[in-house]
Structure formats: structure tokens, C-alpha cells
Image 1 (cartoon, rainbow, N blue to C red):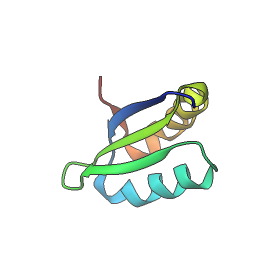
Image 2 (image 1 turned 135 degrees about the vertical axis):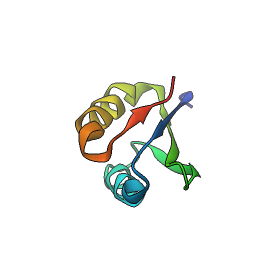
Image 3 (image 1 turned 30 degrees about the vertical axis):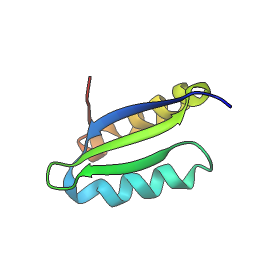
Image 4 (image 1 turned 45 degrees about the vertical axis):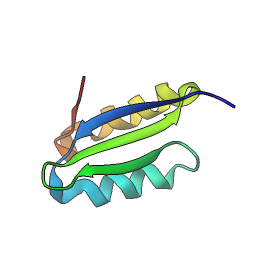
Length: 71
């Protein structure tokens, strides 16, 4: 089984549902959890082998969702 990695980010709170919808539209790409709805903090968990695809997706949505990745 491939190792899972996680990435946390903040998104515009009104766009949390949109990000979840987009992530789930890509079969088996990532699992998204909302950590704090009030601040828009979310976490994505995904297999290490698809990190490039996840990062490309997040890059493409950064401006639209006011997405800020957490270090």
C-alpha cells in the first residue's frame, strides 16, 4: 500500500464545498476534510504517487478560491 501524505490549506469559507466537489470529481485523487469551517482550513490526504497531480490542481484553483497552502 502506498504511503499517504497530507497537505493543509485555507480557502475562502464560501468555497469549501466547491473545492470538495472538485477534489471528489477526480476519482481516487484525494480525500478532503474540513478542519475549521470558520477559518476555511482544510486538509487533503492522498497517495504520495499523485502529489504532482494534487499540486497542479491546487495551483489551478489558487486564485479562484483564495487558497493559501499551510507550510
